[in-house]
Length: 319
Image (cartoon, rainbow, N blue to C red; front, side, top):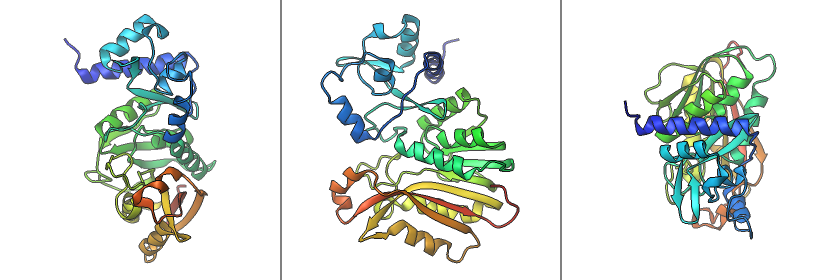
């Protein structure tokens, strides 16, 4: 029986994860601006190391990889021939001892699966939220799961009966499924726009939604609403109805600061004002994606801050 292209891609991606794990691969993915600067340096345009190929997304010669692996990756479409040599269609980043696959640089496609410094801050926020001694959770959902980092970090830090990974990007769901499996995590990917077609309540909702105003409307980057905060506010609203008693929300996102005022915080105060949620809001990095301030959309913005919103519904404590 001839393998489908989807099955072949799965096989290629799985082979890549196993190979990189055996090679002791490590790579921390920086911001797109840093990535571009480093790749522009003299002598950095062609790959000589595995991190050059699967981290920095540089062109490489086929002799850099074992022959059998190269053929598997080529036949499955994981690597493709291009000007200057072969290129990987994915990057591999390490996070808390695991290897996670996501889209190659530059992430120009509307269907790109993003992973970067925000992912690391998101993971740290989840780990801090799940304090030692946290009781087992019944249902958990990672909204806009991307590469699946949120679900994987949750599973590594607390016992869960069920973990859902939801996204509108089929490519993201494929990578999240493979990344979770490689990490030994039992998590179910499901297509969903926020929590449409997903029923029931959750003991924990985690989310790291896109929060920028992207003129190209790329799904992994464009947050909608005023200055990119639309999705973040929708997720906050969802939490009011979809958290179980004692359940909690952890939302890592960005907020535009205009004339010294945090626009997202003001909107959350209004949203949660008449709810029973016990919540907190913390600015964890005062200045991210500073290059966006050079664009027309952010001409009135002082800075973009990385923030963490946590909220809990009163009742039996689970987190």
